[in-house]
Image 1 (cartoon, rainbow, N blue to C red):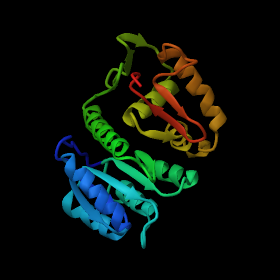
Image 2 (cartoon, helix red, strand yellow):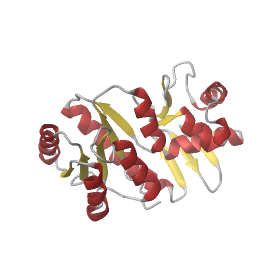
Image 3 (spheres, helix red, strand yellow):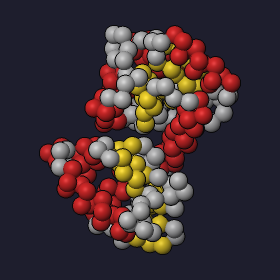
Image 4 (tube, helix red, strand yellow):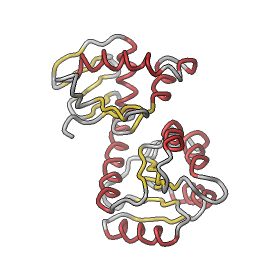
Amino acid sequence: MRGYTPAMTGARILVVDDEPKLARTLKAILSGNGFEPLLAATGEQGLELLDRCRPDLVLLDLALPGIDGLEVCRAIRRDRQLDLPILILSAQDDEDAKVEALDLGADDYLTKPFGAKELLARIRASLRRATGRTAGRQGVLEHGAIRMELDRQEVQVEGRPVHLTPKEYQMLRFLLTNAGRLVTHGALLREVWGPEYADASPYLHVFVRQLRQKIEPDPSHPRYIVTRPGVGYRLADGAE
């Protein structure tokens, strides 16, 4: 994948949304907080700006005229092979569409209406994670107190070595690669076990429970592998 190493201040953010009033509001919020906004009203315009201006992050509405948000997300991840963060904006709390977007590689989603503070916090967190993923390509994946050395296949949590089975290691590696992202059940199953296991959520829950037993200070109250009921898991930094 072509990687991005975004700077926090001055990051270029592509807003793909066909609501003029919301687009103007987002532009004002982003500009007023040190970001450089780019606006597109359709999926086609968004992809054109993406290729021409190389933004650091995309705010993407799902309901767009022409090419919808899911198609734009698919094009970014599969056609253009870009690893920049994608935050979904959704006017309806349509969980199926959100899950599909997350499966396609979106990092997170916000349900409209949302507050400026939450939006900015999600943007900054996504940009930090993108920088961390770039570092991970150099041989180390690290998030909070969890550290994985890829060459040695060694894992440490809060400085102590943790011995994982091959499947547990693959699961944790995928979660670390997507640290902070909401990873769906299907995406995790496909990555670790293969496409034929994409619907085997009960199977996954057993392995997640085993992994938590090894890395969580209190597995009954997980700090690192956080569950989003009915959707998937997110690797947190332990300080939330």
